[in-house]
Length: 108
Image (cartoon, rainbow, N blue to C red):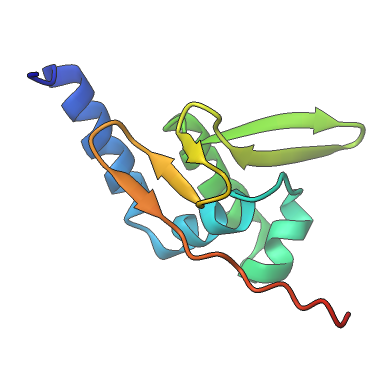
């Protein structure tokens, strides 16, 4: 089956968006559960304005979905690309990316 030129362009665009270390870390942080900017930033440790900039790029590419929850905004991986949250896999149509499961420290 031949892929359309538009689907290939879209996939290339999404891969370019993900070719940034900060954006990949954001996806890895929100692939398991929705998080606010401050929750994401506790792990990513970048300026909040820079984090918001990266989240906008991810949202515009269709990789991230945002939802208002009271005064805060929750960010999560877009359901359209989430292949299997248990396997930590996103499906871009042309390829899939697997993220390693995070080890949760249960002693805290």
